[in-house]
Length: 280
Image 1 (cartoon, rainbow, N blue to C red):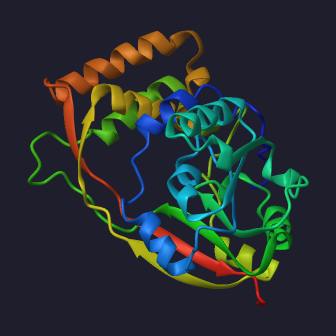
Image 2 (cartoon, rainbow, N blue to C red):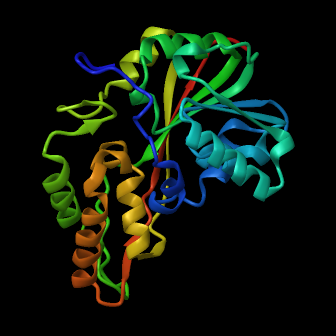
């Protein structure tokens, strides 16, 4: 973790109900691409570290015999359990409320471990080493994220683009320009250089997969509000007693940008870095 910042349990406090609706989906071809890359056979065990409300675990559950999702946030675990129940797959998925730094936590061995835009919140060297020990020889670690290098526009789509710059500006008016993170701040954002961390841990790779997005999405004002509250740096609790005023200002901003309350957006592509534990 970055120097000068420590994790605390308010990092995503109150964000869980907004996460699924607010965050843009991974590319729709992701499960198929991973099934091919991993040559899954419906058996094996998946460990999803920092699982949030189950975004990755639920989408990949059909590829494995058993799935275990781990997350320290009570709200995220509750939301994941609810969604697994709605999907009728609760018996195949286990949700564990724990920090990644507590692994292996008696969870056993796995064929695949996934980190869906979660690795940067952890003591990465410690967690990488623990996960490597939990994988079977030849097992895979997947770092999954939106592709950051592509440019996406709403050109040719029926509604205005989401005014993200204006939304960010409004949020900073309420919370300040320094990136909030739980009870602390991260003025320099989240750390990178995952490759160096995973190389130090002894993983081989990576093999890079890009699953194309670009699907046309329609987003409502409520979706954009959920997007704001789904992030650690603008989690609901950070607004304190000014939350209602912020929501009212945000609603006005969005209605001025699109009187219909609808926005167009293209789904991002998904980048997967596939690492292997040596051995067969």
